[in-house]
Length: 329
Ligand SMILES: Nc1ncnc2c1ncn2[C@@H]1O[C@H](COP(=O)(O)OP(=O)(O)O)[C@@H](O)[C@H]1O
Ligand SMILES: [Mg+2]
Figure 1 (cartoon, rainbow, N blue to C red):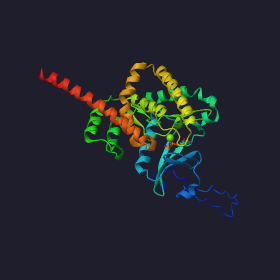
Figure 2: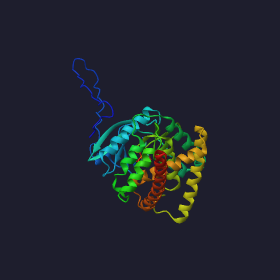
Figure 3: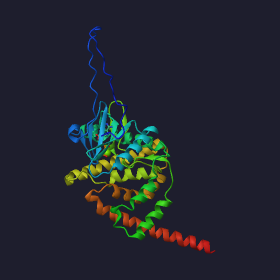
Figure 4: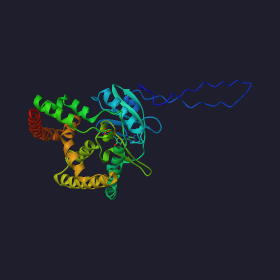
């Protein structure tokens, strides 16, 4: 059932055809009825991690979140995607929100094409241009500004209440909150899941999709997340050791070249951006653990978060002592 129609309903006034006029009967096209059940939707076009993608109306798709994702997920992605579109960070238009058999979804304009991952899989020659495309699109996202999206620091502070963070002590959570409060402000649009699977391309256009995790803030946060995704995120489960080694080499090479192009496009200093990545890395690890529960990532993420928080706690204590001494003077 559409809770917000993607566009005005098509209605057709009945035409009269009297014997006197003997005009030819023109049958109006049947009013298109929106699918209201899963069986009416048919088979998904794509089965993705968080959602299944179905054909909706002509030129439109429905991203229907999997059971277990609350209505808020669809609502948040819709708000983010609309804002990203308004600010020029994506060409995909979001048309409305729907609910089908207790699953929430969003209707979007369809872009006929493939993801960068699919294109590179089909023809490895495309890997060559991939880092530059990534860098250019990421720079475009960061050059767009938003006052409306949620602040990334607040989002991550909220994640500390998430059950995935139950392994942390309350002192560690306090350290994390103090660290988050000290992170730099910003109003760049951040995607926070920027990788080759979230970029759709065809002969005419390249566009960033999947705005579920988007936020506003300092671009360092988003580059740090992309750094994590290309260097540390779980690869496809079930692959052989040899494949793992190969894919790891490939994605690290892609990341290094993406990073070089990104710095050049935005005229940024390499050492400064590396410092920003390091600064945001603990926040990104918390974000990843809260949003993504890949079984192979949970333990390593918990260990890394704990280590980073210990380092931060020591640094906070030293800073506190220095400040205390300065106050006492
Ligand atoms: N607007 C769109 N037009 C065409 N295909 C799309 C569109 N949005 C998503 N898709 C397809 O659905 C897949 C999953 O969408 P995505 O939003 O990335 O979901 P997930 O959050 O599960 O990763 C994409 O990789 C792409 O193949
Ligand atoms: Mg995606």
